[in-house]
Length: 638
Picture 1 (cartoon, rainbow, N blue to C red):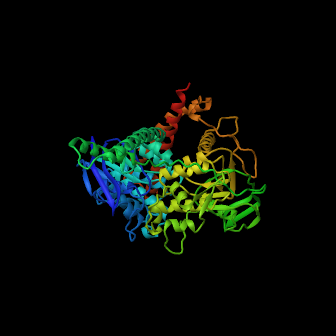
Picture 2: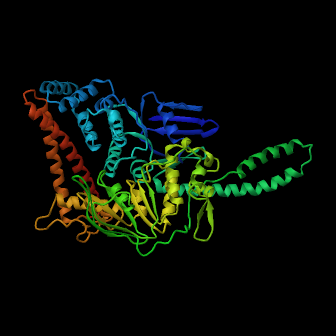
Picture 3: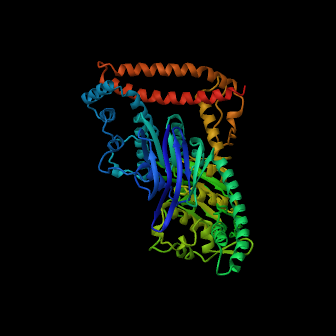
C-alpha cells in the first residue's frame, strides 16, 4: 500500500533554504532513517509530513487511511494532568477502560476495581492491556498519578515514548510512525528493548537517530539531506557510507571536468565581440550551466589532525583505596587504579550508579570520603559535561572560540586559526558570525565539544557526548578521537561510539563495585548475556563460572565473541529441547489466569495477584521466545 508521496517540497527560514525540490515515496512496511547535519531541516521535514508544519512549496499526499504518529525530541504534555492522563489521552471506550483499570489497581477500592474489570471483560481489552503493561514496565513508568509538570527530562522522554507506542498499538489501521531521536536519554537496556519492539510490530517507520546500531537494527533504507537535496540508499549504515563515498568521488570527478571546460569556455567568452550571433548566445547559455557546476563544493567531513598535545609525564592519575558515598548510596568502595598514557576507557552502568560523580572526583570537582587521588603535574583535563554551554552574555560563535585561543597548534609545527578549526567541525564562515543564542540545540552541543577540544587537553573526559549530535558531526568527532594520543575516558549510551573508541570498560555494578572489563561494549554485553544464561540454567555437577573481576579482585573471564556463529554446547541443545514445553506451559498458565479474571466470584486480593501475574507471564514468554530464536539460529551450525 502506498502511504506518502512528496513532490518539489521546499522550506526556508528567512533567506536560508533548509531544503528545496525534495521528492520521495513511502510504502507500507518501509523502515527509513533520515540523516543530515544539524540545521538542515530534518525535524522540520518530519513535522511537515506529520501535519505540524506546512511546506512553502511543493505537494504532499498522504493516503486517507493512514494515521501519522509523531514522536518529537521535545515532547509536550499537559503539565497539570497526571502521567496516566497524559498517556491515555484518547477518548475511546477501550482506552478509557484501561485507564480506569490502571487507576483502580493503584487504589484500595475493591468496588472500583471490580467495575473496571467488568468493563475490561465487556470490551475484550485484556490483550491490549497486557501490551500496555509491557510498554510501561520496560520504560520503568510506575508513578501513574505523578503530575507531568514534575517529571525530569529523562522521565518526560520515557512517558512520551510510552504514549506514542500505546497510540500506535491502539490504532489497528495503517500507521506511519515518525520518531525524532527516540534513543536520547534512554539507557542501553531500554534502547535494545525498543529495537526488539519496533522489529516485532508491523509498523511503517521514518526516524532520525544518531545511534548507528539502533539504525541498523531497525531500518533498511537511509535518506540523506545533503546540500538541500535528498539521496536514497537501500541497506544498512555501512552500505550508506560506501555508496556515499562513491557518489562524492563521482561528483568530484564531474566538478573537475566542469572546471576544465569552464576555463576553456571562459577564455572563449572573453574573446567574443559585442555583436553576438544566435549560435554564440546558445553557447553563452550553456556556459552559465558549466559555471554553476564548476563552482560546486563538496562538504568533506573527514578530519585528520596531527595534534601537538601537551606532553604527559610518567605519572598520570593514581587512585588509592578511594571511598565515596551519599548516605546509604555507595559510589566507590576501596577503588584502586593507576591510569597509563594513552588509555581509552569506557564507563558504563545504570543511571544513578555514580558515573558522573566519579568523573568529577578525578578532576577535583568532588572530594572523596577517604583515600587518595593523585594527579600528575603535566595532566591537562578537558571535560565535556551534560550541563551545556556556560556564557556570561550572548556573543558570536567566532568570538567565543577566540576567547579560548586564537590558534590551535599542530604536530608538524603549523597551526589552525579559530575560524579554520570551526570549519572542520562543520561551522561554515557565515555561521561563525551567528550569535550563540540563535544556534539550535545540537549546534550548541557541537560548539561546546569544539571548545573543549580547542583547549588541547591531554586527558579528555566526555560525559554523554553523542546526545543531540547529528551523524556527520559524530563522524568528525570519532575521526578526531581515533587519532587522539592522550588519555580518553567516555561515558556514553551510544554502543557504536564506545565500540570504536574504547579498549576496556569500568562497569559500575552498584554498591561501590566497579568491574574492569577487558574489551569493548559489544563484547561486554555478549559476555554478560552468556553469564546470565548460565546462571539461569546451571549444569548438574558444574559450578557457574565466576563473575569477572570487581576492582580489587580476581581475574576477569574473557568475553565470548561471535556467539551466534559457534556450535551449541550439550547444555544449550538440552535447553533448546526444553524451551518449547516451557513456553507452552507459560501460555497455558496465562490463559488460565485470564479466565479467572473473567470470573466475578474471585476475591479482591486474588484479582490483584492475577493481574500482576499476567504481566509477569507476558514478560517471561517474551524472554523465552527470544532465547528460543537465538538457540534455533545456533542449531543451524550443527
